[in-house]
Image (cartoon, rainbow over all chains, first blue to last red; front, top):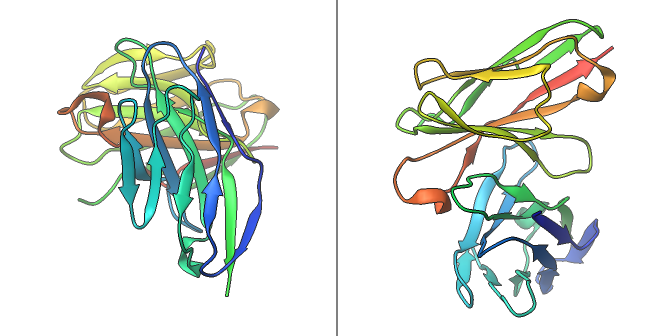
Length: 113
Length: 116
């Protein structure tokens, strides 16, 4: 079956620090990969996606590259801000005709001034 | 775009009672999803509709759970004979019918179910 493994949190960084949140996956076929984010008091929203190997998804300064050889989709940002404090979820969709998102457990990021 | 709306926001009930939640998707979206999230975990898929047709169901969706989308617009999720383990946040999402499965799923704020 499909599964997603994320690095354990919480992660605490100082403003302007470099961020990496590791994500690896197991999937049947060729999955599409996503990062969703949940800001405090808000619903889940899509941050970025990549649909095939070597694609790079990017949004709001965040990037992630679909690495088929290492089955990974690590999230990175060069300089985090306090407003990036949130819970980040790695997710995938895989399987013929499936629209089911499989999520990791989430990583809570806190950025301090 | 008014977003995905879920009601109620919070439901408290006694074990053994039946509960029903409602989800109103974004108006032009024909795909609708239900997920369940417990504390410290990511959302887990329950079921998916395209218009009024229920096309995917998770094995998590036991026979006590039933979901409907009778006219392809709003959806309801009913849990019969609730158990302690049903306590969770129930999330609804919707997505556009064009562009396939890579279209973003837009999530509501969820209904938190607490079983006494």
